Image 1: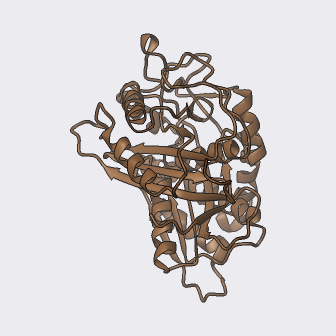
Image 2: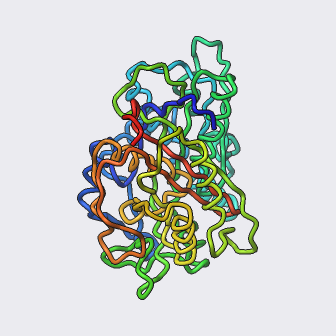
Length: 397
């Protein structure tokens, strides 16, 4: 990756951690999981503040019938534009990722069709496609933009790496000169009985407890503990011009890989996909910079978490590790954005208090990292690693 800096600006997330950077930082420090029961198992709902932002969008008549995932993305994109304080050009690309897309609408209308309860509404097809999410985000924010509508609206669905695949697309647009800025993000509203049943069939869903999701649990008590959550996040990617907005982060590295394995998840026992993506991201670091900590993907699958830990220990043996999953659950295609929110909090001097349960990870408390690496991985063998840092870095140490 070129050393010419790119800036992530206006990061906004709606998740179980909250709806603001300050609220996310407090939630990380507080370490209190908030769950609700669905289909007899725990799930992580949106925090009250995030739900309020969603409901503001739901009340607008023009969005009637839109899927909850699309509404979450619109709400997050609006918060992102506000956070930019007008300091970002109109994007040439809007790229929003989602693993499952319009989940609620698709499941509801399929059930309606199979049961023959009533005829499908004419708008069923456009509102249940995966691409309608990015299109609605683009229309809401930039449908009448001054650049004559020359905006590429791109929906990405690449399982749990979907948000960072949208960043990959944004990066290609900005680096190539096809756009001066790009809006990217991820959204997921997967708290449905059918989605939970799929994870139960895989035998990886949590059985509950005080900490329903315990990624990287210590080996002697190791168990699958995947717990679903919902959320969304958006941010702008643009070239640095020497001016900064509070909350800006510099994109320092971006790596990806596609691992070929026979497993259902596409993750090998040694986590080579993770390792390849991390190495590629680290190759893009400016001279003198190093990774200070790692935000793990670690969704709570015993084999997947162990594979990631093996990879991190090979590539970054001295880096402390952290995650959001014990507080947010797995937000699927939005998980990269939720992890970015944790990275932003850490770069903003929010310390990591350590895992609140016995963990295999190097979970020592730490404060004030300058450079954070974030892992994501998903079914199909996809891995993407992103490295971010605070702008205006201090001299290399």
